[in-house]
Image (cartoon, rainbow, N blue to C red; front, top):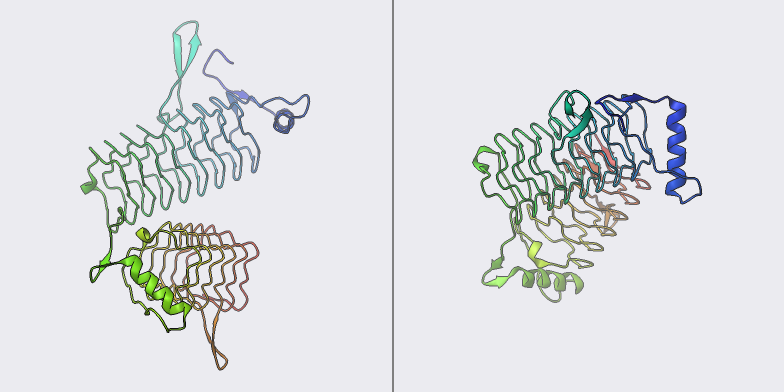
Amino acid sequence: MPTAATLQMLDLSSLRHILDLHAQYRSGKLGGRIANLSYIDLTDFKLEGVDLSDANLTGARLYGASLRDANFMRANLFGADLRNADLRFARLDRADLRGASLRGANLTAASLIGADLREGMIAFKDDKQGLRLMKHEKRPGELDYAIMTGADLSGARMNGTMAVSADFNDANLTGAIMSQAKLRKANLSGANLSGADLAGADVTGADMSGAVMVDTQTSGCNLREADTTGVLSAPISVYIDDHPLIDYVAQHEDWARTGGAKGGRQTLPGVDFRLVGDMRKRILTTLDAEDAVFFGMDMSGIELQGANLVNADLRRCNLAGADLRGVRLIGARLTHANLEGANIGPLELGGGRLMRADLSRAVLNHANLKNADLTRARMLETTSEHVKDEGCNYTLTERA
């Protein structure tokens, strides 16, 4: 380790050798060695997809580096300079990022589960000054202007972190510790803050519209200074004519199972279904639930053929293998929804007539559409950024 706050340069050949030895170490091969890139200047290096899990990058300078899809799981990035770095889809689970500067970095859809993003300082031994602090151009341990859209920060430690004007849109901050964090003018719209600790945080001017705040600690946090329009809090028990919601769901399922011989078709607009619990493999054909809330529910294998789910909140729902033929999802929110293998094709009505699934104006950002069937689906003005759609069938899909 250097004795002064200076960085060392590294040529490509030496870097490749270090990475090769690290790969051998990761695979358990004889002669492998964990990568030590502490205090190395890697400014603007292109390291897309590199595996540096468990590596030591203490104080490294990665300013503007291309690190998309890189693996930094459990890596030591204490005091690293990651300003303006491209970390889209990178894995930083349980990484030590104390004192690291991520100002302006792009961490869209990155995974930082359990990462430590608290403040921290590196001190060097100096013959003249005793101890000298390593300083970046900006405050250490800060996320100002960082892009964390759709990132997974569940369980991350961010207490006291500077994150002014940072973009956490649709991020997963479940259980994150953000007490005393500086979140002025931050974008937390649509973020999942369930179980997060925001005690004493500064959210002045922050956009928290549509955020999920179930069991969120907010003591000393002045939410009046933030936009909390449409915040989703803990679900409350729903009773209709003195009967619990679950009874009406059961009645509709009986009606669908028996072709109308039993039960009754239900119209349940604006209802919060979260307390219904298990919705897996339920048969709720033609359910009318416009503006309803299903956030985070397991609805895998459910049958919702011809259902009216206009403007419904289906964020983070598990709809894997669901039968959604002919469903109306106009304006629905499906951010982070799992639709793998779902059938969202047309519903046959007899006589050669088809009811097409309609996802016009729906939001599918970060959704999983692997092997889904969207044959003939209408997707006019649909928003679908960072979607996983390998094997998805878009035959005759109508898209603007």
